[in-house]
Image (cartoon, rainbow, N blue to C red; front, side):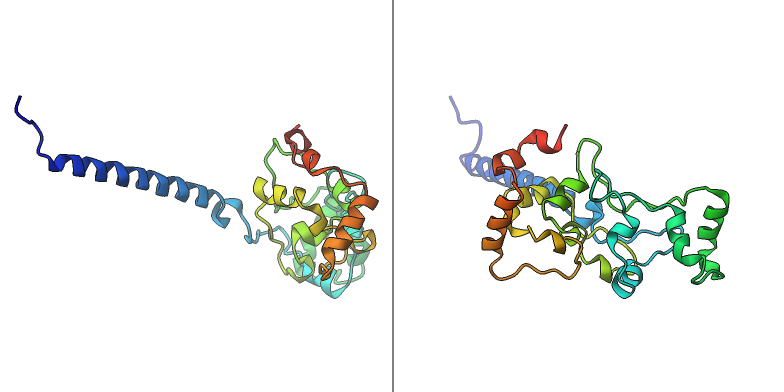
Length: 219
């Protein structure tokens, strides 16, 4: 029987299969890279707010502790958004006639909450508890970044599952003394591995197997 295809077709078919697989791999890599890109994770994206509240001014310049506004951070799963009364504790006297603070005064007069735009958002199927992290020696800046240097608040971390797992697989790298949890300028010392191991035992940090178990975050 006569040969139907030229012998060179074998080479062409092999090259086609190779480049087809290569293109598929590049496409998959592109999709995975895009999923981790700030464009989709909203990392480093500032949010327009009803009032342009500056953490740099309040935390960095004035030295206001996180817990003054986020009262639930040590005892609750959520850190909490402060009621307008918390703002008015100061601004009933300070800048009490400033035009840009009129939405605060209006909220206080009408008892209608200010509709802040959420900056950090996890998927609905992810369970995160602020209090357990704070009480186990994980500092605010480990997740939220240098808040005391942010004129406008933005999401400093990607908040991806891989990012969470990196910490859960090596918690000793971020553990700090409890009196340093709210210190935005804290930096890990050169002997952090040694200190972290000691704190992990002192704070009774669960095993890595438990920390990276699916049910720890997906309930």
